[in-house]
Every structure is written in structure tokens, then in C-alpha cells.
Length: 247
Length: 247
DNA sequence: CGTGTTTTTGAACCCGCTCAAGAGGAGTGG
DNA sequence: CCACTCCTCTTGAGCGGGTTCAAAAACACG
Image 1 (cartoon, helix red, strand yellow):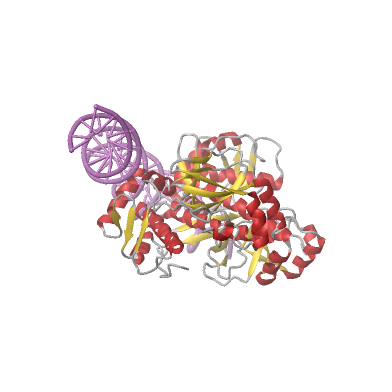
Image 2 (cartoon, chains in turn brown, cyan, red, yellow; image 1 turned 90 degrees about the horizontal axis):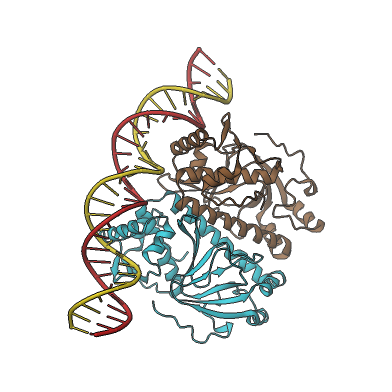
């Protein structure tokens, strides 16, 4: 966890997610409006930000760290339904009550907007509304991709798919596209992985060991992952390797 | 299949989905613009409307019937990722190439808009853009709900969940809220159900028989379903019955 | 070093899958 | 009307991947 400390990000202009978040399309004037209604909040790994059913007085962007959306049945069965990485958006304009439980999976910084004024901005500034539509469509695509993983892939393919997704997002964010091999930190516990993949934590552990034994990944310590051959990983995930990591 | 013949719906004002579709918020002036770029297309049950990877020159609303979005892996494993009922929207503004295969699950009528002019409308008329955002957020919620079904529910719960969803949508559309018992036609084959639920067709058949044996549903013929007790069905689905069918 | 947490590994079981055969319906033609 | 085909759906039997339950190992932090 390389502890991204968000050094006094007060002004949007210096914000690390300035060009990917919901504010990406805003001009300086619109940014000024956002500055007025925004505030930062930090959470430590494991902390629950919001319970399903809670009143929700803000929406937010993830600035750094990883958060997750989960749904839980009465008997405790849990399914993660969203993995929120930097620049991703939390909350639904027009909705007062949270539908999902939001948890900080790693240490986390969020840029929060008070809900009411933000909803007014949606109506008044097309740039925010348009970017939000775009991001929501992307989320929908991601959710549908995940439905294929959940519904049809084997345990091994599921693990490989998750690693591939994180590796890809990580490569985009940190521009470490030197070679074909990738190194990144897994921001998820085994339990979080199992909740994402619809598996038990034991199966996740077993399949991680198997992928390691077969040389698909190398584990440095508990969380650091090395992918020697991205194409091989994609193959294990059951996707056709279209080659382009940054598509 | 009660063969909704869409009696010469030429004008939007008479359209059965006028108040739920992407055009719901439009005033008469905006409707006139849409009329210019729209045209109807009919498909018969089983017909493929568009293959994943195809060029996509239009977006559309489902007027009557049911369509499905599916994703397929190289080895043929298939997952349905969207079930499109009347008023639902197909296609993504800004995208030229279809990501999913779209199939007419029953006989189907769609109201198509040429893509380019429609995209211009998104930018120029906030009513369309705003409604589309709202609908996309609803789709995202539905997809996430479905991730819980795919990832964590048993075969029996999956079937019950699907029946509950269709029963609910059907109740809203046709306002047959006389009693607690519901009757509707299943617009899906066993195979389509299995593709939706991440099961085999045999398991779907077995669980349908089991639900019938246990009196949760009554089958009249092959496709007509009677749900004597909606709360019971919800219970079988593993959801807490919040009672309100029309929430 | 001890305690609590996360992860790994083992062994037995079971739900849903696979493979296979049969049943039911709709349409066609004699 | 039956005979035939095609297609969807049902049912049966055995198998296997992932779960469950249990215990040990690795690690973190005082």
C-alpha cells in the first residue's frame, strides 16, 4: 500500500483524478461551483463508509484507494457488485437511501459533494451530466462483463479475470507500460476476492496457489503480484487476448 | 404471446411506451425532432437483431415484445447480460460497434433512431440526456441485483428470482393488480432462462418442476405461469418480501 | 513471545453438470 | 385421421468442481 497521501489537494486543478472523474469535462467556472460544495473524507482500510439502507447526503469520487459496493442477503451471503478505483463515482443522484453497503477496501480518500447542490448541477451544467452518463454507461458495461464471469466462468478463470482487470486498471493509472510484465499490489483480501467472484475464500486461496504453481503469476509477499506474461493471464481468464492492454 | 400488434403507431403521442421510454420527458417540440429520425422495425421470435462486433447505425427502444443482450465466449458458453422489455433502450450513444449480441426472444417491435442525429439530440436536448441517464442508472441497479443472483443464489432461488422479476415488470406494464395472485406468460425458452441464470437448461427444467410440485407456481401449458402467492415466490427467491409489488 | 487475524491445506460431501434417453407438441404431408 | 419429423422440454444416472468443516501455517502487532 504505497500510501498516497493526497498532499493538500484543496484545489481541483491539482487533483489527480481531474481528467477522469465526474468533473472531467468542467471548465474553470463550473469547477468553482464544485469547489463550493465539495469536501474530502478519509477512511482506513476495512472501514464501512455507508450501510445499505442508510440516508445518503452526499455523492463522491474516489480520489485514492479502493472501495467496494456489496449486497448482502439475510443469511449473510455477500456479493460485491462494484469495485471502485480512483476516479470512480459513488452514489446516485436523486436517490436518498443507499442501496449498497460501501466499504473502504484499502485506505481511501474521497471527494464528496453535498447531494442536493450536486443534483442541481446535474440539471444546470450539461458537462457534469454528460460525463456522469458516460461513466454510468462504462459501469454498466463493466457490470455486464462481470455477469459473464459470475455466471459462466470456472474458479480458475474467475481469479484470472479479476487479476487481469486490476492489472489493466493499474497499468492505465500508473502508466507503467515499460514491458509486457506487470507488477501491482492486490488491494483486496482473499475474502473480498471471494465476495467479488462468487466463490468461497478457500477456493480463491487454492486457485491462487494453482496459478502460482503454474507460473501464471508470481507472488511477492502476500499482496504484491507479478504477471510475467499478460497474454498468458488473459488466456487463463478465458478472454481472447486482443493484445492491446490500453484499449 | 398475446400478439400486441402495435396498430399503426406512427405518432409518438399514441405510443404505448410514450411515458417510460427514453423520450418520456420530451415536450411536443422535441418529439417532433425524434419523429424525424425514427422508424419502426419488427422481428420474429428467435431472430438475431445484431451480432456482437457489428456496426451499429441506430439505437432503439423496445416497443413490444422481449429482446435479450448476450455475451458469448469462444467455446460457446453464453451469458445473457440484459433482458429488454417494452420501453427499454438498446445501444450506446457514442459507440459504433455493438458489444453484445441482441436477439428477439419473442416477436418484437422496436422504435429505432438513426445514431448520429440521436447523438446530436443527446447533446442538444437535456430532456433526452437526462432520461437516458436515469434509465442507465436503473439498468445498472438491475445488473447489480443480477450479480447477486448469479454469484450467490442456488438454482432454485435463481429460478424464483427470474420469475419474480418478470412477474413484477408484467404487473407494472399491464396493471393487473387485482389480487395477490398473478398470471403471466413466460417470454423465455428454457435455454434463454438458463443463459440468463448461469445454469444448464436441464437444471432449469428440474427446478421449474420442483417449484411446481411444491405449489409455488402453477404451469398452464408450457409458457403460462400462475403465481398463487407472490410473497411465497419472493421468499423462495431469497429476497425479503417488502410487500410492495409496485415500489 | 503470545494473541488475533489472514491464508493455506486437507478430506469428505453435495449441488449442479454431463451425457443419454424419453415425452410432449406443433406442423406437414399422405 | 395417422405417420412422420422437428423441436422443446422433462427425467434419470453418474460424475466432478466447488463447498463445507476442520486444522495447521504464516503473518502482524502488541
